[in-house]
Amino acid sequence: MGSIGGYMFRATMGAFLIILVSLTVVIWFTQAMRDFDLITSQRQTLLVFVGITGMIVPLLIMMLAPIALVMAAAHVLNKLSTDSEIIVMNAAGVSPWRLLRPFLAAALVVSLLVAAIAAYVSPRALRELRDWGAQVRADILTNIVQPGRFTTIGGNLTFHIADRRPNGLLVGIFVDDRRDPNVHSTYLAEQGEIVKNDKASFLVLQGGSIQRLEAGQRDPRIVTFDRYPFDLSQFAGATQNVVYTVREKYLWELLWPRADDTLYASQPDQYRSELHDRLTTPLYPFAFVILAFAFLGPPQTTRQSRTLALLGMIGAVSLLRLVGFVSVIVGVRVPAVLAVQYVAIFGSIAAGLWQISRGQAVEPAAAISRLATAIGERIARATS
Image (cartoon, rainbow, N blue to C red; front, side, top):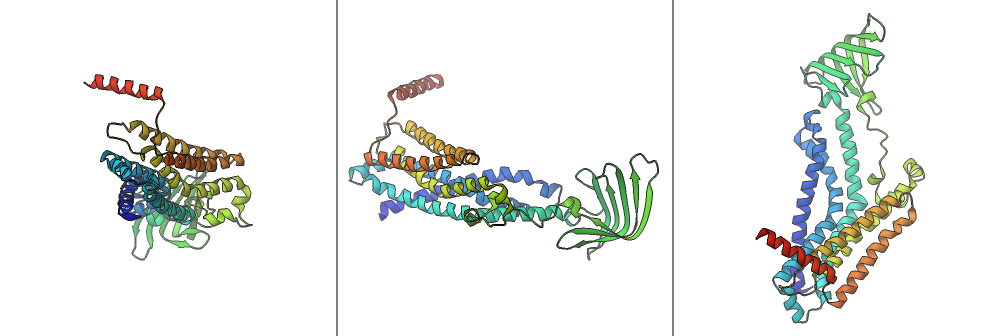
């Protein structure tokens, strides 16, 4: 690659990492705030909160990496042009293909990263997110109910315990159950403990009574018991028999679905659309870099404005990604539309390479240039 290519590669990857981390942190923070109830209402630790919400980071990286790369490439190309380095290298006989080489190397690194995340890392993280979140929300009496405090779950079930012993024994239990609109039940017990098995979890109450008031009745019925199992799985949500969504399937599960996959039997179109989305995602870094170089790579003097070229690059990249999103969405119902994203990606790569081979800057139409000049002059007069 040479010293020049190594310098451009390092500059591009450095800018890529900074932009990717910044975008990921900002978007992760906005998404994580949706699950802030893990700390407030469910009293989880900050470490658990960060661990659960952090499971979406691989998915964010997969989506943001091509965008971060094109922003990094545009930054490096603009810097090289501003410092007149592209003009000097062009005058020294350096071909555009040699200048493009380090950007393609960076695109290859990002493409391999995106492919690994799309094939395994992102589905694995999303599965962990589903399992971990379900486990936290299902373990209600361990993580939600605090001694001396009334805790309402779902608006119609209230727990209260007087104390929790070190061995896990609960003392002074009160449960107010209004889930059934026809029966209002109140449970009182001297003590109890949580018992779990592979299928369900129970709060086993010991030495207490149940007071049930049926709708339309004036007097309640009171039943005493020595031991009574209160089923927690009815409302807590069990984690067994989890059916993973299409987004949570590994790439090979999309390529070769199992014969007993009930989700595939009911949603084959979703499988096909998700598969093509995963296959095309690693191609976007190459298409974006080539488009960025086609618009910003040709040598230009410092007197030539690169604003229109930058806007053109943003428009081309945005249009290409929009076509990909639309083709995946529409392709669920119209499978033939899935081919549009391949045509758009390879067409963009071919058009970009052809433009790079010309060695000329992308010149906007005369009408666009006049319009941009008029807008610039009007802004200058308004600010002067």
